[in-house]
Image 1: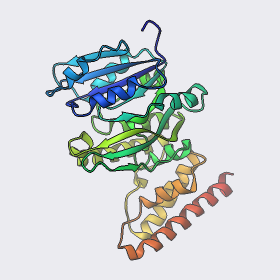
Image 2: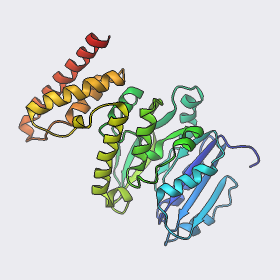
Image 3: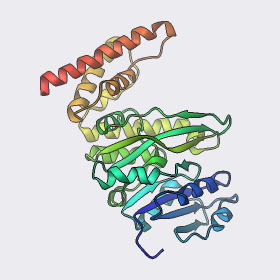
Image 4: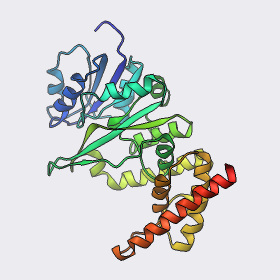
Amino acid sequence: MGSIPLISVIMPAYNAEKYIQEAIESILNQSHANLELLIFDDGSSDATRSIIDRYSDERIKKFFADKNGGVVAARNHCIDLAKGKYIALMDADDIASQDRFEKQLAPLEADACDVCGSAQLNLNQQTGTLKPSKDRYADADLRALLSVYCTMCNSAVMLRAELMKHYKYDPTIPVAEDYYLWVQLAADGYRFTNLRERLVTYRQYPEQHSSTHVEKYRLASIEVMGHYLQKLGISLTLLPIKTSWPDRMWKAWQFMTLLNHKIPGISYIANCELYARFQHKKPRIWSPLRKIERWVISLAVLLCIRLRWG
């Protein structure tokens, strides 16, 4: 392919022999074909490399490491070499819908956002069941909820290459590295959106990295949340944690009013999600009261914000 690709697709792979062929095919069969696919085999010990080597499509750029250096180094290597105007992220065990890039290009080319994700289908590889993801879609909600969890699915994201090349993945954050990247971009004011179409099928299985390092990911996520609050100028003492009723009434109120002031336009539903992070899960009999508390506080926060800051 002689022309410069519009999209560079980044696909790190490590011992992905079961799934990588389907992932590659889902990229090569995109309705928008002006792309390059950079595949980095990160020292796999299974048949991943031989599967990659079968492909002769000129849009594929292949990179092979003799030793496993980690997904952050693999992704950053490909980012440095990407030629496209946009970079699309893709893991070697997921599946992109045929119109994924076509749909994501529209808001990016219209300058309606800087980071474009989408809803997903979650595939339980053991049972074969598919479940739709639960997502937020608007910029304010996505950036606000980054304070309590990672709102973007890595394999569903496309963004401007200049942003990705500037920020990249931080090598000091080997776990929750994508979460940290979104926090950096959000804190610096870049605009997010999630498309409502389910453009990626995300596999879930026991061997995947996020399943085998649950505790590491939990601790890393707390660290990322703290970093985000610092970037937003919010005290770490307000970090959302489950706490008693009197304590959360005060801490959650402070946290939510500050966050709503710094990120205007957070929806009522997103505010309810924020408050839920301060609530303990109790027996089902208490669920209606927990929900009412959540609804009332979230509504009060929004009314306070409107009266105080317009």
